[in-house]
Length: 369
Ligand code: FAD
Image 1 (cartoon, helix red, strand yellow):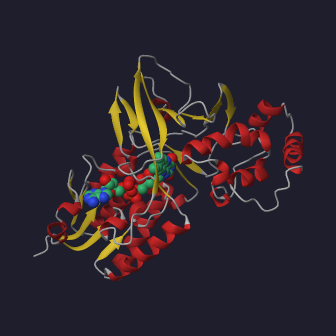
Image 2 (cartoon, rainbow, N blue to C red):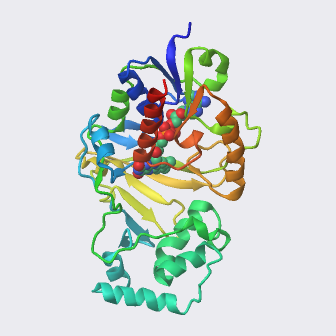
Image 3 (spheres, rainbow, N blue to C red):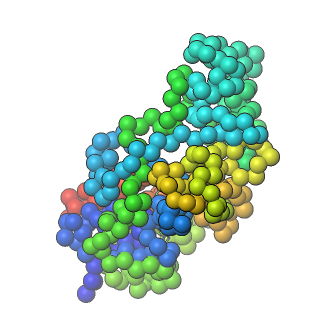
């Protein structure tokens, strides 16, 4: 007497993609979410008629044509291109590091001049084997870019000195010797016209959805509703934290409505000095070329005390990865449960990656029936 084929815990992009594919295949899905809205972290709230990215700026980008076509069936995308501005003590630089940045920093007029300057700064540093993040970054980009655009931003993000952070956090740094301010290298990029909620609503339209519903408040009842469970919440929580908690970096957002049409002239501004306590300011209307009379901005602050904070970025250090391994071993024994998405896999996923992962899991699920 199980009413549903699938109980999907979490209505984020993983859960919603799964629900869409399964209902399309004729399955009955019940989606529950503990939040008062669907969509997980891509959810937008309408304020002053502007789509406000409630859990931080989200820009869709992918190199995969199939995934691009897949999301475009739910909404048309605009031509937004992410070109953040770095604000270091009120001097502005273009990101990612490119010829505009080098021209501003050193007056370099050609790629070879910029390359020579970076090489000159790295030359005397003796950093064959970087021991920490500071040494690693210096080795990649030299002293000026590190000092003005990386050091303080990273220290604010992690709440730690760059010399105390491991080198592996920075493997590569996007650096290019053209005047191209497009942050992403991917072929396809944009923001859904009408906002991300439109995509989620479309994906969930043939499922039953219950909000304000935490699986753990009555897991026996919710589990009894369906033949199988898709779990997209925290994996450590699913196993009652028996091997300890997985750690996350987190952020806090402060929202402001300004009675002006244009506050900072760009959607994303990164604050790379030590004096400014926040890391970024988003001006949401610019994601959609909005012309509303007012504007909404969000200041993003990193938080170090993450006890009751939203779990945003997994910390892939040795301790967490070995705890995760223990939970994954238990997860493999749960034959009726599919663990998916960024919290259940304890893995940073971009939106296109989480969709790809959900599509892969639905496909193998339908094939093994
Ligand atoms: P989530 O969106 O977290 O969904 C999980 C859902 O499960 C949530 O709604 C939660 O409430 C629910 N849930 C959890 N536990 C329970 C429970 N016990 N009971 C019921 N419900 C539960 N990606 C990009 O491609 N481009 C970007 O620019 C970008 N920017 C980002 C910025 C930030 C600050 C962050 C944190 C992420 C960003 N991402 C970006 C990544 C993107 O947010 C994720 O890929 C996507 O949201 C993951 O979807 P998900 O379904 O795995 O997880």
